[in-house]
Image (cartoon, rainbow, N blue to C red; front, side, top):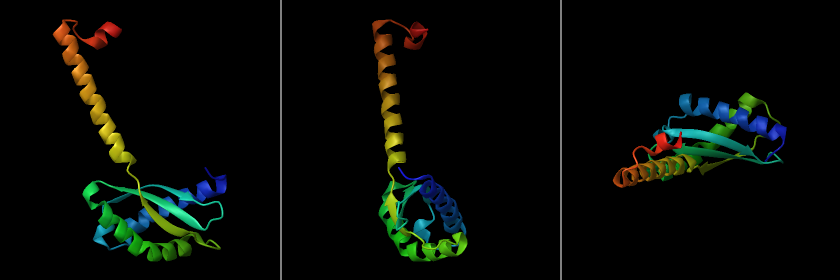
Length: 131
């Protein structure tokens, strides 16, 4: 949770970082990085930048690339946002997308198992019975 100001600043940093990563950063390690959110500390000293990658095996490479580019990104953000003090960028891998995909797969498997059990008992389609 944060104040309205820190949330606005986080959204602004998120939007600007997305553009910078797409157009200005040449490091191939951060090419597949997807920014998910930015959480700015109340004292504006640091901004936690949450990111994910499509290929989870490249997580450590992406983190290293993001850390290497953090100084450049901070300098570019300071020039664009005109802040008195620019928060220090702290990249953090966000695995909620991976967990969500796994949970979705578990739910699909459970539904398939329920349907197979219902057919074995001769009940027919369980969704039709619920209506």
